[in-house]
Every structure is written in structure tokens, then in C-alpha cells.
Amino acid sequence: MRMVVLGLGYLGATHAACMAELGHEVLGIEVIPDKRAQLAAGEVPFYEPGLPELLKKHIDSGALKVSGSYTDAADFADVFFIAVGTPQKKGEYSADLQYVESAIEELVPLLTRDALILGKSTVPVGTAQKLSERVDELAKDVDVQIAWNPEFLREGFAVADTLHPDRVVLGAFPGSCAEEVCRDIYGSIISSGTPFIVTDPPTAELVKTSANAFLATKISFINAIAEVCDAAGADVRAIADAIGYDARIGRRFLNAGLGFGGGCLPKDIRAFMARAGELGAAEALSFLREVDNVNMRRRTRMVELTREVCGGSLLGKRIAILGAAFKPKSDDVRDSPALNVAGQIQLQGASVAVYDPKAMDNSRKLFPTLDYAVSAHEACDKADVVLVLTEWEEFVSLNPSDLEPFVRQRNIIDGRNCLDASSWKSAGWRYCA
Ligand code: UGA
Image 1: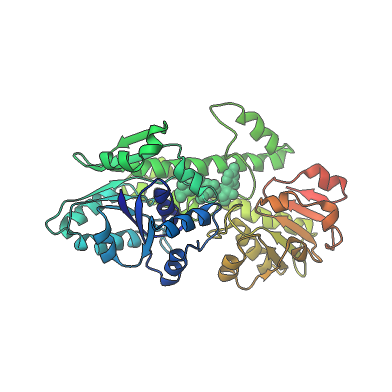
Image 2 (image 1 turned 90 degrees about the horizontal axis):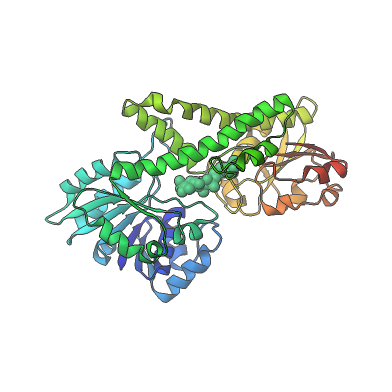
């Protein structure tokens, strides 16, 4: 099938390459010229394991093409995916829908044949309805339908999550052709037994926001328990393991530590609260404010812990920050807990040296005033404390005795509960988590 993907960021580039992998002919639209040129040359402008190979394969074969023109898009196909960003509005909790809206405003007047627009971006409940009304105003003598087909991919596993999703969700208005089209598009995925849930657009929109809200809640739950463990002298990792054996609870997303960041969970729970407020259901989601609070408190707690380990003041101390990406296998530093902590520590008078295996360029752009090192060893040079803030395998496998010659003092804080505490302690380090 021929299809267009509007927006080639983390979501859109992955979706476009994966649709080509499923055997479709895909045109990806990217309006930022530099990004577009890179993608058209078969290069991925961000780090996502497995995606460069897939993108190059399908750019080379011609199954995936890239353009910046909405006229090309309207000519190319009758099925369009919206995969543009929906960031948090500046100074507000709600989602900024300007990119979704402008995709519709630009595309629909150009359509000369009946078309189906499938939204993949995470949007507040009610968005598909509003867009559908706007589409009816913009469409010229053609039938243009909107449906919502939310995406559940995780950065770092984006290709596998797209090609082998846990479920495919579709929210379609009555009488829509969307189910038939999606059964074609995702034919091989659905026939392999993946659940295909067909519902109405508000439900589909809410499936996505509820999933992210639940994941955020799970992380903050275990982090709240970690606060109690700190006070009581208990071991949160053992608690997560023990409660995780209960299939109703499950062990995944129960890793206590520095908490969640990135371009999705933080902004999605805030947009969810804002939308519930607009709908008169604010009270129902008031617990998400606490989920957010617990999460943000982790960052402050990490700064306090570092200060305590430094003897009460960060002034003049040298702090090594290992990890800048919001999670491993990603170069994404949007709302990165690690960089947030690095910034706070620097503001309290310490000098910080940051190292991340993949997120250095993005970190420099966001926090140009931090010091950056080219390796973990260089970051640890003369460090009073070493902080592990993203659980990259490179840091998990660090050998305490290799690091010892570099540091000024053998203090390590494990911000992700990912290190083998006993090996650090037995090598003479002060280990905190
Ligand atoms: C999240 C969801 O997991 C995806 O299903 C969803 O499609 C995506 O948002 C989206 O809305 O686009 P992602 O942002 O890639 O995916 O990252 P996650 O793997 O969910 O991790 C989010 C944050 O939680 C990271 O900072 C991670 O370090 C943290 N985390 C995760 C914990 O602190 N503890 C855990 O146990 C798990």
C-alpha cells in the first residue's frame, strides 16, 4: 500500500522505515531541511538501535522516499499518518497541538482524492473529533476521514516495538474505512496474533494517555516506597523483586532511582491532568500531581545526597556525572533527570564533568555551560563523587579498581540502582543509592 508519514522525528522516522519493512511504499515528509537531507541520504539524525540499517535499506531500495512538500504528499497516497510532536506548552500543563493542526491545515486543502488520515501522535482526548470537524471545513469535494491509531513504541526499542507491538489500537468514527485500511497496513502483524483493538477515537486517545499515566504511576509508586525505605533502612530493590513476582503487579517498571524523564511520560501526565480539568474531571487525576511530585523530588534528593557525601557543601567540589540521556539506548535529553541533577549541582558551586556514550551533542546544545568529558574515565578525573545517572551498560560494567586511579575520593552514588553494590564496597568505595 502507498502511504505518507507526516513528521520524521523519533516516532515518524521509525514508523516510516517499519512500514517500508512491512512491504509498503512510503513517503516521509519532514519540514526541517537539515533533518530531511540526512534522512534522504539514509542517515538517522538521532540514536536509535537498528533504525539506521532499516532506513538505509529502504531508502536504497526506493520503498521509502523523503520530501518536504505537502503537494508531493497529497499526490503520493490516500493514507496519511500524523507523527508530529505534541510537546508541553510553554508555561502550561496542556499539550501544544500546533504541529498536528498545521499538518491538517496544510495537507487537507491539497487533497484531490478521498483520503484517510491516521493520527499516531499522542493527543488529548477529543482531538480527533475537533480535527475531524476542521477537516470537513477544509476538504474540497472529497471525503477525508480521520481516525486515531496511537503508538506505544519506546525509544531504544522503537523498531522492535513497531514491528512486533503488544497491540494495535484503532479509534474510528462510525462508518469509517479505517478498520479495513489498518487490517491491510498491519496485515502481517495482526495475522501473527497481535491483538487488534477497534474502538472509537476518544477511547483510542485515552488508551495511549492512560498507558503512559499508568507507567509513570508505577515508577513513582516504587520511588515513593524508596523514600520510606530510606527512612526505615529497608531495601527497595528487594521489595520490587518480591512484589514483582505477583503477576498482578509485575516486576517491569518497578526500578527505583532517579525517576522518569524524556519527551513522553512527564509531558503526557501533565497534559492528561490539564485535559481532565477542561472536562470537569480534574479530581479523578489529582493523584498524577503527586506522581509528578514524587518524580521531581528524586532529582532534588540526588542533589542532597551528593551534598551529604561531600560533607555538607558542594562548593569547590568536582562531580563526575555518568549519563545524560533520559534512559540508556537513547541520545534523547528532553527532560533528562541526569542533566537536571548536573545543572542543580553546578548551581550549588561544584564543577561537573558529564559523560554519556550517545547524548553528548544533544547535552551540549541544551546545557552548554556544563563541562563535558570524552570518556567515563576523563569525567571521573579528580572527582570527589561519581554519580551514575543513566544505566548504560558501559557504566553498569565499570570496574571499581579501574576507576580508582582517576578519582580524588572513592565515592559513588548509584542513581539508577544498577551497580553491584558489594563489588564497589569491597573495593573500598563508599557506595550510596
Ligand atoms: C514511553 C512509553 O514506555 C512508551 O510505551 C510510549 O510509546 C512512549 O513513552 C511515548 O509516549 O511515545 P519512552 O519515553 O521511550 O516510552 O521511555 P520509557 O522506557 O517509558 O522510560 C521513561 C522513563 O522512565 C526513563 O527516564 C526511564 O529511565 C524511567 N524508568 C523506567 C524508571 O525510572 N524506572 C523504571 O522502572 C522504568
